[in-house]
Length: 577
Ligand code: FEO
Ligand code: CA
Ligand code: CA
Ligand code: CA
Image (cartoon, rainbow, N blue to C red; front, top):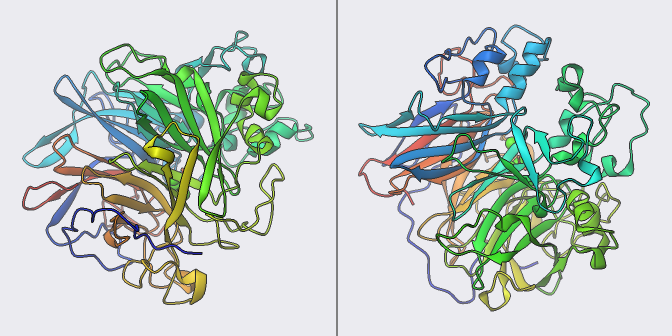
C-alpha cells in the first residue's frame, strides 16, 4: 500500500514555524520553545457568581454542576457575537472518580449524583475574554449557557414526528430532552454550533434483564445492563424496557445558536443517526451545504449530507440542514471512490425517516466500505480535499461490524488488527464537493518504526521523531496546515514504546511532513481545537487527564485532575495558525 503524504503535484504548504518537541510522559503540557499556555476553564469552574468552586472531596452537587463548566471537554468552536468571544464546547462524558468524589466508589449513589452526572454532560457555552494576555471566563455573561442531558430539544427533518420517535412523554415525536456524549463539533457559516452525539447507547439500560433486544438496538450497541452510568435507575426515560423509542431520539447532529441563549437546540435528523464524531461543513460551488461525518465504531462508515437548498449569505439559512440527501462512502482499491445515496429506492427502506433513524442499516444495504473507526474530518481550506482520521481498528480482518458486514483488509484500511490508525484523504471530482465521485489516498499511516519493520512501522513520513498512534481530532488552520490530535495508547511500552503521552502534531498536506507540536499530560487525550478571531490564540482541549489515577493536571500537588481548555500563544505575539 502506498502512503506517505507527498502530493504528486501541489505547492509546498506554509513553512513550519517551530522546532518539534520530543515525546515524553510528563504530567504537564509541553510546547515548542517560544510558545506559552494557560488554563482558560476547567471542569466544574462556575460560570455564574452564584455557583461554587469545586469541592474535590464530594465532586460537588447536581445544583453546583448545573452552574458550572461540564466535564471532559471535546470539540469546540469560537463565535464572535456583539464584539464578544463565545466558546461553545462539548462535554462528552464524565470522569466518575472525580465527579462522584474522591472517597467513594466512583458510581452514582443517589438521585442527586445522577442529576450531577447529567449536568456534567452536554454543551457549555462560555463567554471568554483576554485581559493582559490571559483568557478567562466572563462570569455571569448573558451568553453563558449550559445545555445538558435534560435540556428540551426540537426534533427536525425527515424523522420528526415519525412513530419510531414517539414516546409516552412526547406522543407527537417532535420534542426530546437532552443531548449527551457530545464528541466532535462543527460550525455553520450562518453562525451556529453543531454538536455531535456519539456513544449515546451507553446511557440506556433495561429494568427487565430478560428483555428481548431488537436487532436495531444491537446494531447500535444498546444493551440491557447498566454500564456504570446509573441514569436509568433514577430517570425511566433511560429504561428501554419502559420506553423503547427513547434511543431513537439520540445519535444525531444537534444545531445550537450560541447568540441566542433562549433558543431551543435542534436535532437535525436529516444528517443521520449513528455514533457521530464531528460535522465538517463546506459550501459546494452550487451553494449546497455539504456536511462530512464519521461514525466512530469498528467497521462503520463515512457519511456525507448534501442539502437540497443553497446557502446564501445574509438570507435565512436556518432550515438548510433539514432537507437533502444522505450518502455513505465506498472506497475502491484502485484509488477511486463514490458516494452512495441512502434513499428508499437505493436501500429498500420504506421512508427517508426510517433511513434517518436506522442509518447504519441503510449504509450496510448499499454496501458502503467498512472503515477503521472514522473520527474527525477536516476539509482543506483551499477546497480541494478532505481528510479523515481512522483512529485504529483491532477488529479489522478479524470480525465483522455489529451489523455483520465483513471487514476485510481494503484500500484505505490496509492493516489487519490495526492498532495505530491512519489518515485518509479524498479529492472530490472536479473539485466539487457535491460530486458523487472522488479519488483518495492515505496521508499517513501511524505506527512505530522503533519497534516494527513493515506495515506496523507506518508510512515513510512517520519517523521515530514524530511517531504517534490513534489520530482523532483534526483541523486545518488558516494557512492550510493540518493539526492532528491523538487519543491512543499512552503506555510508552511495547508496541507504543517511545510514543509517550497523547499529543498534537502539525502536518503539511503538500509535502507529507509531520512535526510534533504538543505533548499532553498523563493519561489525557488531546481533543478539540479552535482559534481566536485574530488567530493569535489557539484553544486546545485536554480531556480526561489521569483517567486511571495517574495525573494531577492542571493543579499539580495532590489535586484532582480536571479536564480543561487551554490557550496557546506565541511569546512574540504572532499568529498560532
Ligand atoms: Fe468521542 Fe470518537 O471520539
Ligand atoms: Ca474523538
Ligand atoms: Ca478516539
Ligand atoms: Ca474521548
